[in-house]
Image 1 (cartoon, rainbow, N blue to C red):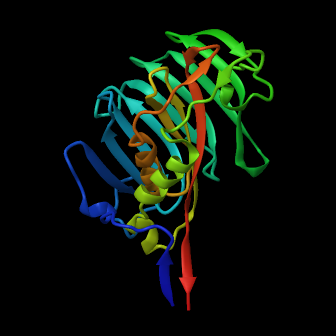
Image 2: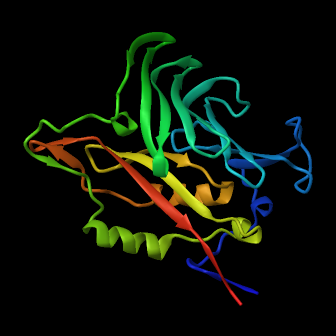
Amino acid sequence: MKLILTICLCFGSLFSIAQFKESFYALDKQWKQTDEKSAKYLLWIHLDSAGNWEYSYYHMWGPMIKLQTYKDHDGTTLNGLSCYYYTSGNLDSIGHYKDGKKDGKFIKYAFLPHDTLRAAMLYDYVRDSLIKVTDPGRDTLGKPNYKDSSDVKESIFPGGIIQWQQYLQHHLQYPDRAMSREIQGIVRMIFQIDEDGNVVEPIVSKSVEYSLDREAFRIIVNSGKWEPASVNGRKVVSYKTQPLVFKLEVSK
């Protein structure tokens, strides 16, 4: 039996790479450090673009459990985004911290059929004080509603959907780590396009496995400038969701 990949692959082995700005830990069921073969969980610590340290906890060969961002490498002061996941890999909730205090939006998500994500409740905090609670109803992702505006243009990748599909086809790679265990699935990403066309706060909304999630994240982050959305000629932030399919075809 031979494996044929729908997308080319070229990532190195997970534990063969260890740089100053990132490190990996294999953990047993008591969350204590162990060897890779007997590990139940994986912890990936790395420096993000804002200079904070992200702690990403995964099932060893399965989806993410949680992501927490700290001001310091030792993980003592929350500062930035935190995400929590169901055992299925679906996103449960997110929150934002500043200097160890809740500061910004906290969103509890719900999943509808076909993995449709929507915000169930929104909580706004300022320095640990709850300012507002919002029930967004059926609105997906908790994004603004522009239905009453006469001229709404959605953000698009330069060149439109065809160029976006070509970008994904030419740049998406199948990681060796996932291929070695024949792990496949659909990683779903949510992200914002700001008023200047920049990709902002990409989040895994449906996790499958560490290396697949990381590749999906890389693809979104490296997509470059987009054409921003506009409402009545005014540029606005828009919200995107993107499934990325990783599939191994088997031939006899």
